[in-house]
Length: 124
Length: 278
Image (cartoon, rainbow over all chains, first blue to last red; front, side):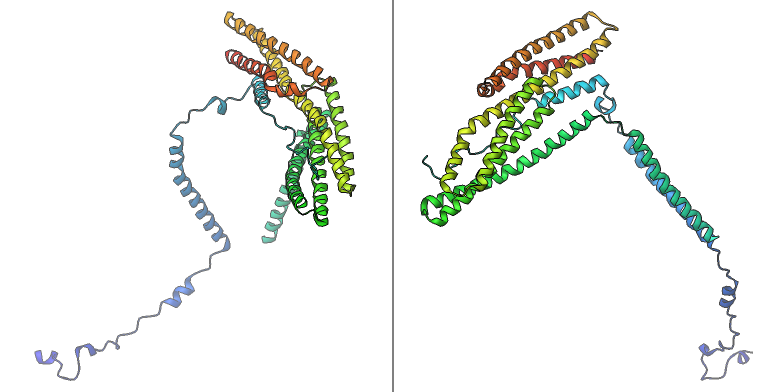
């Protein structure tokens, strides 16, 4: 019994088992390629649109908490920032600005710094 | 299908462009107010003043350079006394003299335009000073023309002497202009503060308390005080201008105008307080 199972050929190794004798696997690639259908153009547009909307949504979600953080420190508005000047206040402001400009200690256009005694020869 | 889409897009874009341009044109027509001649003239004058300021600054820089060159040429002439140095100094003098005249012409023109544009100056005084400035301006234009055509060195010396003798007149005209401009500015502020006071008075008439009445009286008293000083100062300045003796008034400018300036500052702060309490 043992003798029947044991291979008597001393030159044949176990690795040389008849692997190649197994039937080759069928090539499925060609079948898959033939089965795929080309997508219509509008499908790409739809996919693009969906991706775009998703990106927008993601960006919106990312930006949302930042806005909240910015809103948190409440800036105390100064009266000049929020309150619009009334017509009388505007008139007064213009007059005050003009008064500042009209300070008599400053001269906007003094007499030009020219030499009034230019002469080629010194003696007259 | 593709063709239809393209046509639709092209039509949409075209109508958007046309619509945009049409709406902006209509909006411009609606928003642009009908400007009267006075406003147009004022705008033109303000533009002219700005241009004169720029020109004046440029000419002053040019003159300074020419004056420096003239100084160098004059030193050379005094040292060397050669024909070449005489030629050089004469040409340097021509340039410096002409630029000096031009600087003064532009300066007086600038002051003249500022006086015309000023709202706080009495018309008779305005005309008086403007005429004075124009007289000096004409003299300078003539002097500049002679400088540009003069050839002889000795004639240059006589032109230089003419200018030196006239310099007091230029300074007088400049003082007159500067003084009426300064006082005119203060008068303008006063007029505006009076208008503000009138507006406040109209609101006060509807309701008033004892405190407010007292504050209003103080403000009115201050306005009257400033008015009195202003009138007095105008009379004094007018007399000085008529006599062509504005230099002393001008050298005491701060002393003469400071009471008005402080009074106006106080009036403005009183008015602001009144407004706050309304």
